[in-house]
Length: 265
Image (cartoon, rainbow, N blue to C red; front, side):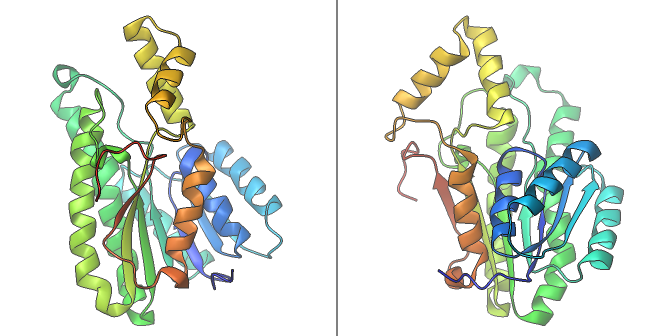
């Protein structure tokens, strides 16, 4: 299937590992030029090399250390992307996600930090790329969220709350830019084998006294597909939504969770 993505320019945030990295690799295989970022320069450099090795296309990859909580870092990142790649066609908003906690453990500072990371990073980056997308009459904004926007997850108060805010903002933006050939969609992974989920399992193990393996088996037993997802399961959907094949799909929140969410929408 020709997805007509060769030579498009994409920003994929938080892409040194996990879902962001898998998404960037999948786009690279389609010939997409990439701007990738992480808080760790060494890790993002290694991810860059892996992306270049896994594609047959002659693509450009810019790898930069960026703190997505910081407006200044985002501004510098966008300047480097414009200089190195040009106008952005595809934006994949992604962050590591707020840490698990109980409600009473969360301070005002925790709420503010999570808001800057989870919501403001997506808003700031999208605000920067939309004008050029309008000029081209083509663009894709894809937010990596969580199935918690469909089925809240116990202990993830910050994520459950703020990701719903991103979902509402994304739907409103989708309506506003649709006439300009720009789509805005959100992908909602369920339990997926990433470093973040490993940390959540560690936390649940510590509080429950059960092993990580026992907890993962319990999780898998409650998923219709009877397994925890892999990052590549989500990456394929992101690439499809970025393509011409999805040009009439916008304002969606699509779960990739093995059927675990108990909702029809």
